Image (cartoon, rainbow, N blue to C red; front, top):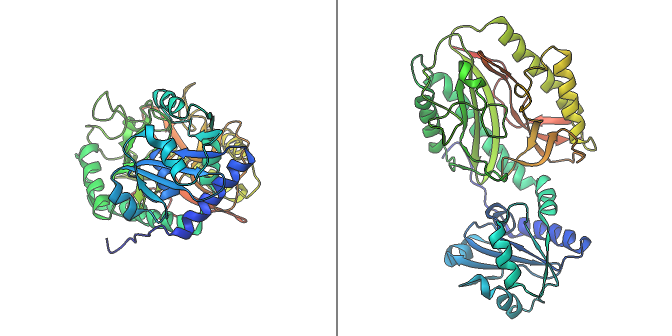
Length: 400
């Protein structure tokens, strides 16, 4: 762990986050929010121990820990951390700390299971339940200096893993064998293993390492790349295919450190690539450069998607850009932070405008059936001058 740095969340950092949430609650006429989703709980309390965070529209937040209370009290800088034995005790515990029972209670309804929603309806029988997930996601979309420092550390991890590929890559290794070696190295650097995604039914194990034609095999995941995976249950990522010469090898990995993520894609090759793959990769680099200049505060994220689509079509790559056929994905970049799929999305019809210190993973890629994938992905910070990359590995194809 000498190369990467762990950064602790301070009470002052949490206070700003809580204040922004309380302002959103007041604007929406919500009396309080009950935060239960793991990532949101960590964002507002600095612990992921099982429990509930009640944030009143005015006053101090109350963290009620179920398991493990001692760890939650140790990990969270919040001043009010108490044990709770059952969700049925939530109203009484809130009241015992001088907080009014909420007439309108906000919940993360984008991810809350229906059975839990019904349970909270019974527990807060005198409250009206409403959704505050969009407000939370908008707050989380703009990163603090602390968060940017964390993502820079994760980006450093991405670059280190990328630099290890050439050392480990060898003809005849399976995708899974190479993936295991790279992932072991990532763990030695402090990679947390878990890559959190908010979208229901989505999951990722480190990322995708795909070679040759298997790189163009689609999957259920909201990603331009899929891969066969090790089984039909997982249905994505590295599989048993042997790595060969003269084909593109895609390493699309997420590095996760301090809870924060960096998304990073590079193309490798042992030998040489066909001219159409080389030209396609260069076209994706051109699109990346074009978007980096245009992606400034005030620009709608959907407009950047349309810019990328138009540019790919003008260059003759519209058929393969971000996938093939009707089921290709309809985005070309995404916000990233504690989760892989954060606001903003560079997607069709998205009107959310960029703001300074949003973090965006920009990923123009070509999926060419029977040949594989070329393209790029870097994690960027939004600035007044456009996008500034936080990952630093060379964007060109690495030939070995």
